[in-house]
Amino acid sequence: MTLTEEQRQRVTAWITQGAKLAEIQNRLATEFGLKLTYMEARFLVDDLKLVPKDPEPPKAPALPAAETKPVLKPIPAGEIDGGEAALPPTGSNVAVTVDQITRPGSIISGKVNFSDGQIADWYLDQAGRLGVVPKVQGYKPTAADVQEFQLALQREVAKLGY
Image 1 (cartoon, one colour):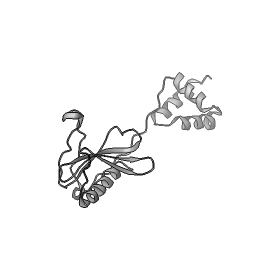
Image 2: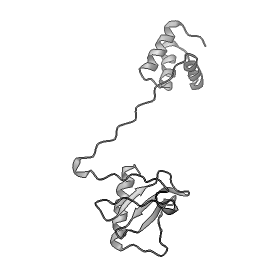
Image 3: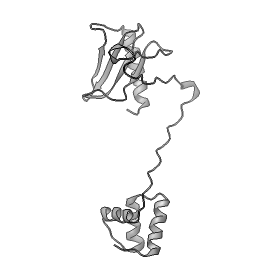
Image 4: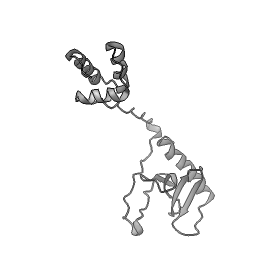
């Protein structure tokens, strides 16, 4: 496929304006009468040594000052024996974090620090079941801690768009 110099300049201008490959394919058909497959349009853009721009990700809306909470940052493994790190305390009695790398078999996972200082791993599996695995075998959090954990987990997961 050969284009005239004017056509090449037009395609270059479309790319610099942020046109996507599908838009370029459509414009080639409507403006120049060139019907190309998507792959042919891709090869054409590649032959012209052009790179379509990635769209800018939408900016997250800022939370009002009244709802701003401390951000829990992931703690690198290995800071405490066994490779597990304690969760930082927050203004509430229960602190919840989300793992950057989800545990196998889970949709999402993380850690919880209950009001009495006990730490547990939590996970949500593909069937939507919530599981909590305490570090100390046989540990059972109080009903109030469980309720606060569920609310804190709901807030953290909502921040991530789940």
